[in-house]
Image (cartoon, rainbow, N blue to C red):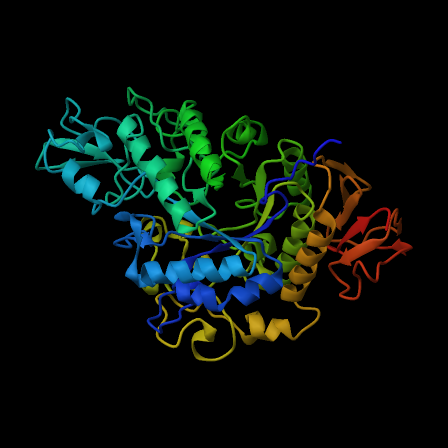
Length: 537
C-alpha cells in the first residue's frame, strides 16, 4: 500500500494580514498591540482564517512603523513585549491558528547595534555588514541610485568620510548580503524565532537583498515612462532598476533560508514585486521560498477584461503563489475597484472585490485578506496635517495612511479599536463599516466573506492542484479546479441564462445557498455575482 503524502499545512490555507499599529489596542494608549490581537482571535477563527501574518513587532524607533528594526530578538514594549507575544502564540495555537512574523532584513534601523558599530570606524568588525563606498570623483554619491522614498539612495557619514546605501529612508541602512556573516546572523534569527513558537515569516522586500557587486548606475527609462509600481516616488519610478534590486543570485539566499526553515518547520512567503507570473514562479521553484505574493491584483484599477486576463495567466503559472487584493502599502481594494472618472462607488468596489475573492478562493496556494477587507472597507480619510507615513511627506499621492487607519470594530468613540486617542485618524468610518453591525446583518460583506471561507474549507481538502480558466461568454468566467468550478460575472451587465453544470454551494448574493442547501437549475448572474459549484455532491 502506498503511503499518503500529506500536503503542507499552508496549502489551501486562508491567511490574514494584521497591521499591528492599527488592528486593536488593549492598553488604551492608541497604538495597536499584541494583546489586542489576542482579544480578537475569536473574530478571526469565526471568519475562517488559518494563519495570521503580523507586521513587525521587533524593537524599533518607528521611523517606518516597525520596518526599521533595532533589535531582532526582542518584542517592542509598544506592542506589549515578549510576554504578550508568547500569550498570543499560545492562544492562537490553541485555536488551531498559525502565526508568522515579518522578517525585515534588506535593511535595519540606523539605531541597530550593528550599524552603530559599523559607522564608528572604517576598521570596525561590523563595517562590512553594510554597504559603504567612497564618494564619486565629483565628491557626490557613488552612483545614481535613488531611494524608494525620494532623493539619493546614499547618505554621507561625516565621521568616516564614506557614503552608506539606503534604498528606503536614511534611517534604514541596507545590509550587505555579500558578507557571509550577515547570512549567518539571519540563519540564527530564523532558528531563534522558531524556538519561540512562530510558524514562519513573510519576507519583506525579498528580491532587494543583493545588489550588483560593481554598483553601476541604473539606466533611466525613456522620457515619460514610469515603472508600473506603487508605493514609490516618481524619481524611483523613472529608473530601470537593473542593478540595485532583483539580482539573479538572490535565489541562493532563499535556497539557504529554505534549508533552515524546513529543519524548523517554518513557512516562508516572499514579498517579491514581479508582476509577470513566469519570472515570479522562479522564486518558488525547486527548494526556494514556499510561497510568494503575486501582486497583479494589488495595484490595478478595475477593468474586467484585464483582471480576468491577469488572473488567468497567474493561475496557471505556479501552485506556490499567494493571492491578495491589498495590503498596508496600497489603496484598499474596494476603493480601487470602485474608482471611476466620476468618483468612487464603494458599493460597486465591494461587489467587484467579493467576486474576485470568490475566484481566488479556489486557487491552489494561500488566499490572503488584509485586515478590514472582510468588512469591505474603502480607504480611510486622513487629513494631510495628520499624515504619519514618511512616504506621504515626499510623494503625497502614494501615501499609505489611507490603508492603515484603525480597524472599526464597533460604533462609538474609538470604534472599538481603542479607549484612548488613536495614533492615526480614525478614517471617517460609519457604523455600517463595523464588525459588530455587519455581524448581525445576514447580507453584509462580513457574512459573505465568512460564508465563502467556510465553504472553501469544506471543499478544499483533496482538490488537485491544477487550474483551468475559460470564458463561457462575454462576461461570465469559469475557473475550474478538479471538481470545483467558479462562475463569476465580472462585467456590469446581467448575463444571459446559464444552465448550472453542477450544484452551487456558494452564492455571493444569496446567503441561503450552502453545501447543505445547494442551488441548481438556470441562473442569470447579476453584475459581479459569483457562484461556487461542486460536482459529485
